[in-house]
Image 1 (cartoon, rainbow, N blue to C red):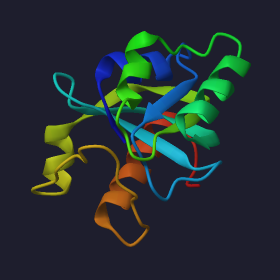
Image 2: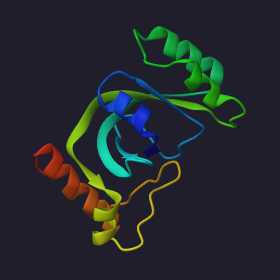
Image 3: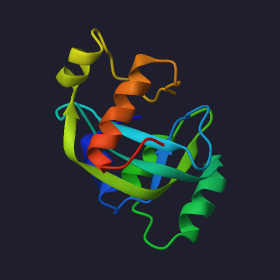
Length: 145
């Protein structure tokens, strides 16, 4: 998932507990969401596990209001205006990678790699999946999942 560094780091450092999006298809509770911090950082910076997924502005507001210190501000709410299918993703178990993986390093392994504009589901058969798994093992110092 691509995200502005300001918001991504808030998530990874545990201060933002809900990510509001216009729409991210094919995401389910329990999925690992790897964050690509967009310009000027341009690097994979960490990950979190998706908790509850909530759709619709009214439902999202109720959900966010039910959380203690969700880390959502007025600027976040403005992002949902005019979205066809707004959604909220609960952030669980955020991990900021000690070493960020720069876009240029990704392109050394996967020539012409382009980060997603919003999000991208990565399938196990893709070279990107293997690259992300290697990054995760290195960053998290844990075996394959």
